[in-house]
Length: 62
Figure 1: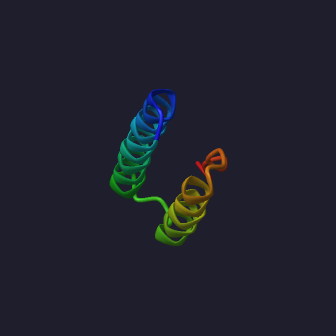
Figure 2: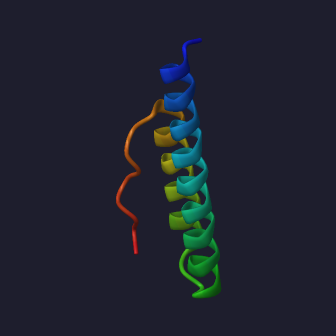
Figure 3: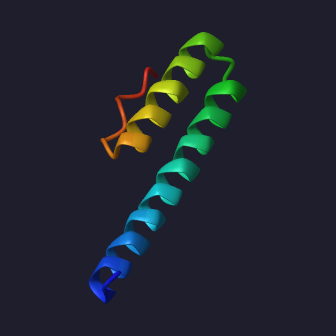
């Protein structure tokens, strides 16, 4: 692995961690606001799949 590839991988990991932290915060707030748990679960599933594929996160349901 070259140095630029290492920096790119590091940036990707950092962005993934940030996205996961934001996703966690959103889910906690949605649960605290007593939104429909099925919508929360469906969004978390779609978001996890998007992150795994390197795609942008889907739009939040609320």
